Image (tube, rainbow, N blue to C red):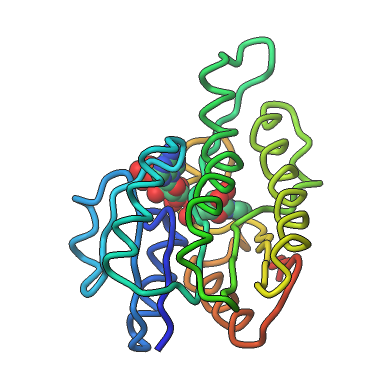
Length: 213
Ligand SMILES: NC(=O)c1ccc[n+]([C@@H]2O[C@H](COP(=O)([O-])OP(=O)(O)OC[C@H]3O[C@@H](n4cnc5c(N)ncnc54)[C@H](OP(=O)(O)O)[C@@H]3O)[C@@H](O)[C@H]2O)c1
């Protein structure tokens, strides 16, 4: 049985992944800033965490350590998006997007390292970052490009562990409600992303994994 910790468990991809893993009998701990919305995920061990807040992340990892002796599969699936051109984007909007997509990845990794199995596999939900250099998406695009650099670097620091950045195209989740963009007709389901992530875990994939059909 695999023990998994998912950050951003309330999101479309986080939920789909937790549901798949629990159906297969695995143990799942899920971190969200609002755990009251998780009651439908039967069997999930909920943990409260704001990934942008170092203290909150530290407390969440302590709680996780009371529930599990070590984590085999670790997934960063928190994220946030907005569309705003730089002339109108406010500093707090910029920070919100960088925190959710990049700084949160650092904080959750940093505090989780002592709880990870020696051969743990860490997954980060990125994006096809080179396609995001678009008007209005500067913060999101910069954060996702930064995430790739962050993961490549930590992969060279933590040699015994595996690191994968999943780079999906469009996925049908509530993330799209936050931007004035039309969800492409060929968008992938969150369940398919979850299946691909589990396949990558089982095959020991390392590095970037593009999920663009
Ligand atoms: N959907 C797509 O088309 C797509 C494509 C490529 C990559 N991705 C990436 O995949 C990941 C998962 O996205 P999704 O599609 O599942 O989106 P989603 O449904 O919007 O889920 C994102 C989750 O991140 C959480 N979150 C944001 N800021 C947080 C914070 N400060 N602390 C704790 N949690 C926070 C949100 O929490 P709340 O529920 O509390 O707001 C939400 O549950 C993201 O990194 C996204 O960028 C998505």
